[in-house]
Length: 314
Image (tube, rainbow, N blue to C red; front, side, top):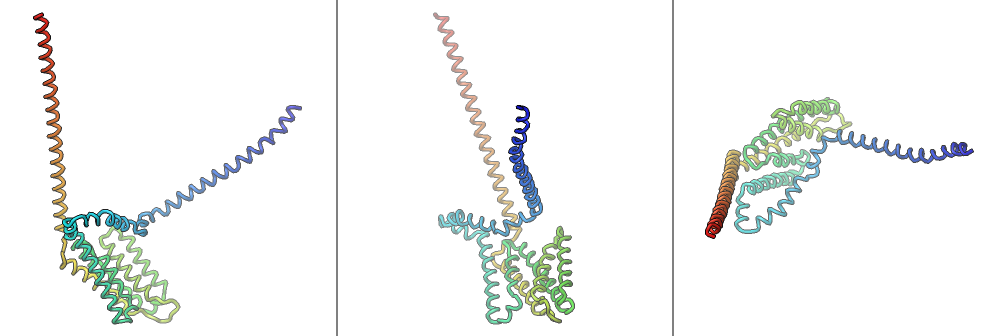
């Protein structure tokens, strides 16, 4: 009877254990699924991580924080520090950058004020060209300006040739095919030195085409003035930028290289001087220690000799 009671009670005891094990198994399966999904999401979106600091503008905010908390207080700490900062090349480069962008923006606003229909042709692309083409040194600015000007002319010409034919200008498939071919060229030539030019050309083509394409319209073509304004604004802003860089306080890459080389020599000399001073200090400390030990040995020997002499006399 006792065995029958135990057998009957055993399934009853197993039911709570099974009921407790089922949620644990579901939880483990859910955690494994979440782990797989998170790892897959991280693997497939790894290419986004380098662009997040640029999208969040974190680098500029970090530089702004350093400027407000360290550089500005140090600049206004004394008259000498203020003059040294104002006469520095970085300050002059920033001042030229502000002057060029302000001049291009003022010229664009004056053009829109005196020629109101000019807003249809988007003359503001020159401001972007000047912002990208400016740099702190002359040679790099010339390279960027040449790239922008050449790409603007080529891209505007290609976009104009696409939008001047009604069969292509009103065919989104053909326009998308041409833009995709340029994107493929950018992808295959990513290691070429002309990648920047190809990319700027693609941007110009896309802007000229997308700013003029009108769906569900018959036999409309693009505007020649749009392409001329697009290329002309970029070329004019780029030439203005390079003129300011070459004529106003020019800072050549050769001078910058000599300054960096001189700074490296100065730091190397300071490092060598520090090592020599440390070597001499260590050598003097070792000599002093040896002299002290020798004096202690001589004192001990003299004391021992005096003690032996006293015993003999006694």
